[in-house]
Amino acid sequence: MPGTPEFTASQVSRAYDCGVRVDRSRVMANLPREERQRFVAANAAFAVKSYKAPRSCDSFERASLQRDVAALTRR
Image (cartoon, one colour):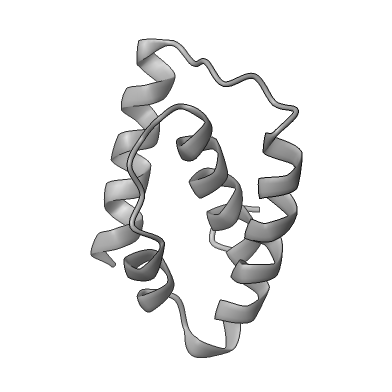
């Protein structure tokens, strides 16, 4: 569900898969303190799964992820 720490973690994980640079510390800094642990746990779970995920994405998906990650670090 968008807006949850788990959704944010999935976006960060997919961005890494597509080669988009992500500043996790800025993403975490923009999360409410009580949601940071959920983000860390979800991010770790997605990291394990991403080893098996395809590492390529098309230019449209990459551009979309870049916008999404930029928004996550601006909040």
